[in-house]
Image 1: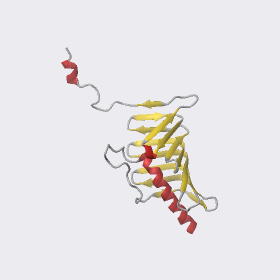
Image 2: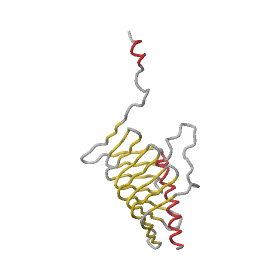
Image 3: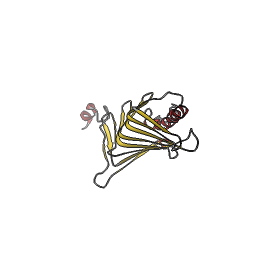
Length: 181
């Protein structure tokens, strides 16, 4: 029972690192850089949990749903890999039908990997991120959490594709056309 508690604590710690990738919209200049979610609870549901203290893994399988505040991660399987210290999470892997939701953003793919030391999330296997009507796809989408940036790479047979819709009021105004000589 103690190892299950340790595993759940590890999952909590590791998901706290994943969540900032899909945190609230990017802050304006001069505002706080990150939202602190460290004190917020995480609710994880799955059909099964296998904890392996010797192998330093916790594996959640079957309709996995992990929620913290406004962020929800869905996958078929979620694997937590931890290091020498019980509270040190090296990486988290979400496998199969990965979907990460946050307010008006959705990231999807067949695989997601969070690497805590590098501070990045890599979304692969048909990755796509949408926000409202806008979207971006590629072979791999990488989010650098601490650097507030992302990189989308193309594959051998497909290029990066972004669809960006104009926002209401961003085009020329009706009165502007009448003012031209």
